[in-house]
Length: 633
Ligand SMILES: Nc1ncnc2c1ncn2[C@@H]1O[C@H](COP(=O)(O)OP(=O)(O)OP(=O)(O)O)[C@@H](O)[C@H]1O
Image (cartoon, rainbow, N blue to C red; front, top):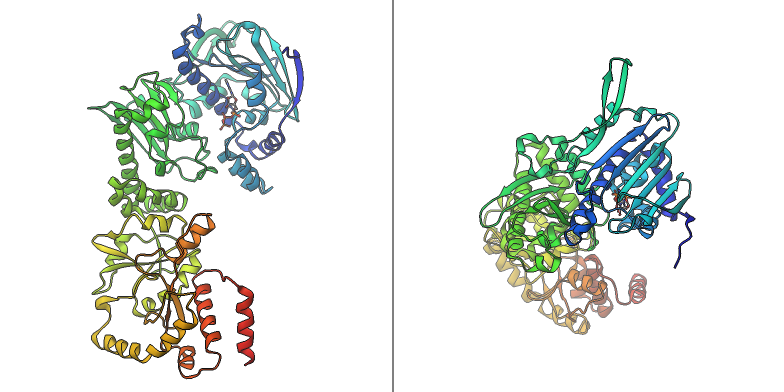
């Protein structure tokens, strides 16, 4: 197929929207465009280094990868050039005309129209190439993909208002040149000093040289003149390969932003060189906020793999367990082969060692925050937990060898604070346990309120025994992987017979036996009335205010888990709950002595117990009808 030499195409609707937003909301931080373009140029060089392993001829007579920044005062342009992988015509059209990225839909749905809030969101989404339009009213991109002939060059041009043009050109050198025609009033950028200082501020960590023409004072002309000779502006060594003492906080931060496309700095980081059986460097960051696509299993980011400084792949998922997928960073291995593939990674012994070591590093970083007395670190751990706690919980099932360590990092809502904030650790719970208490009690619910108001908690509140309130979707699943903490059994308050052990005294126990005998008759009749609904009806002493509640048998799935399974379209076993009644409640006392409408009352009690624990009625209309009949009787 022959392509028309010059064609005009429209931007994808989202690009137009993004451009509008960006120009208005990021103006106060406009110099970031340079960081974004240099970051892209660096990625393009990484890609060439990788693809060049198989195609060494692509380097031709231009083997030293570098980035050049220049400006032209007369034409009022700034140009950033690289000799990286470049783009073909098709790549130009899709890369610079659309946004093909996971999380795009979520991003657009979160925009509020409020400039400040949206600016933060855009930053988080990643501003990228299009940020150049903040300072430019026209952009010209000239590029040629490595490996293609000089006649396959492409020129892309746009004023950012809705359309762009693409045409074929001859281009001798491979790689990409981006020329920004500056808007009125942006002449500040036409200065060596200004550009140098922006590069040093944001892009010092870039591992290839970023070069500019030297500028020198010419005594004869009495002015600064620009020479042909080039100089490097940055240190141009991989950040993780530098001595720790030479890396500043800002450089760690900027490198993180380059890796993660986050506009905020990380929560914490850790740089280590591991020597011994396996040799590698790991620079790992925990972000301060969850990305749009945390729950998307195909999300980008994660760990970049390098072998002896050569970039190999993005998102090397073998290097970090799934439950730590929020960690961003670089692993640079000395032992892996350069032509390593994802398949090889899966089986490599070196990769296993790296993964185990990285996992331990991340857990240590988190422990350092979680166990610190420093207010700032404590606050950071709270932030971490709010953003990533639910993901970390997956580790309880996924990473048995580190389960003990992860358990100590868990934080829960609890009746101690009665707040939805998850701040209580298991160790804290244990330290507050009552004299004679030998179990860790918890309740699960669909929502925090369902858990907090569960009738099962009544006796615990009365006796002042703390109960953990669990309402994250992952909780039930997680609980199936650990049965005790610090030798204390994890015990659901909604399962099995309530055994408060030595928390009840002898007299209480005697009274209970007596009551149970007294109610035997009533229980039998209720059981008959609810034959198809329940497994058993029994007396309970766990309730103080509610007339009845449902519990499941010790070895059966809880009502909450059954509902979750059904909601997820999964096969749920057909189990019946146990109805427990409060022998002191007036409704039960009435039922005991009054035979009128016995079956209706019993059904209503059952339905109410189901509603109270967050369940749904099978036949809500029948329930309403029954209540109305009873109200009238
Ligand atoms: N200098 C370049 N050389 C080769 N390809 C490039 C270059 N600059 C951009 N691209 C291509 O254009 C795509 C879009 O760039 P853009 O900056 O908008 O997004 P991104 O780099 O993928 O993510 P972010 O927006 O977070 O920077 C890149 O993914 C890359 O494929």
